[in-house]
Image 1 (cartoon, rainbow, N blue to C red):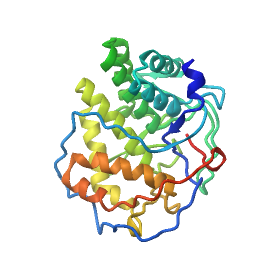
Image 2: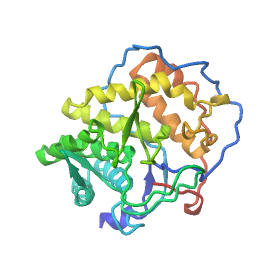
Image 3: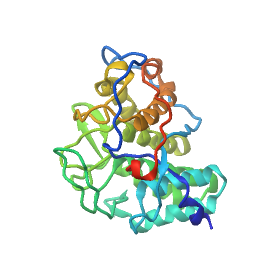
Length: 294
């Protein structure tokens, strides 16, 4: 019965640009440089960070195969509601499509996705997403937390390996100098996307919070936001959807990132100060036809 209800749930975590444009208006401000200085102190919270924004209509079975981000997101909501069995069912559907390589677990997208962005090719299956990996990682960690079933910890541990193992065909992260970026899309050339990376950080945080593992990558990802996140910023507290300069993120994504930054900003005073500069647009009214989402 839970699946019938899920079809009508609001699906979180949109990760595709171009569905909405936002005019740059007066906002709270724009940082003049990096949010933080090199070596800034990061304090990892032991409490779970819960994100409420970023919901749009969609269906789990829209493409006829499991949808990594949607499955992991809805499973998390089911856990929030105490439906452990429903969450486990969706988690198992993710594991049914998983690929294991050298101890690392990956969750491929088995349907094509049009990029709708100049200079970026359409994605043909299988393709991969660091955002999906992060959300699956957090889901498995939370299932282990509430059930004690070591199978979920083993799945989480293997998923985490995708954040440390280099794989050109399944690239879900990359280094730019010393900066660790999590890739939302596996395009041939990396193009960091802010909301997708922040969602993955929340998944890494859940993994560390529950298991005590993965702290190195988590800290490196947070450090990258502190030292490089200002590159997304635009006048008026707006931000670009990506670093390739495809223009300001729509209000839908700005609302997502605003909440992400407020809650992740608790990890460091400089991040909290940066979060206060982000513009918080009014809640948009979107129909399914108006929003393309993963």
